[in-house]
Length: 236
Image (cartoon, rainbow, N blue to C red):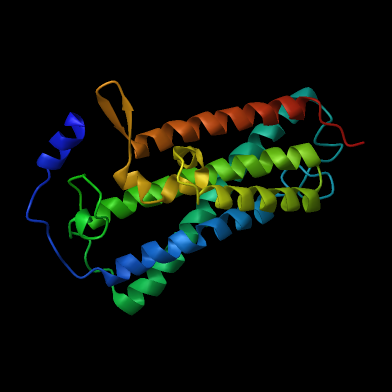
């Protein structure tokens, strides 16, 4: 508690107040639509390793060990880059829409005027960037889940169905009060990024640092499973 008390006492006051309706709308709508974005990722990447897709796996792809390895790596990279691109488009749509209606004014206002429990000396603009970064991390985790599902099922429809079920279960899990939800990729762009800490001894580690670590662990783990499965991949 002494660590938290020290951080609270170091907050710069008085807080800067400003009009930020447009930014608030952007944040609220992205929060609302974020699970739907996960479903979009499922539809987009379902055919990555499917054998029933024109862009999926065929006999030629698996013809040589070298070609198989390069193809697998290329698909992993492409899947993650495509997800990141779609995510930025997703964000850009909300920024343009709500920025045009309610303006993008209020970046310099203190984060505490919107996230009351935050104890970071940052403004709303910086807070939103942290949230957007967390959202990207969660999206990349979901992308690798979908690609793993694709290589396991080898079928677009089954992959989409399984991925939608996974998103539903992740969404249900965010409603719990247990700290287990903080390991959920859907939680990676929540206000928890600005309010939560993990304590190791006397050290308080910000949740957004934990998100970065979790993303690396999840992505490496799923990609290892994908690589292991791809070695045994056959069309029949």
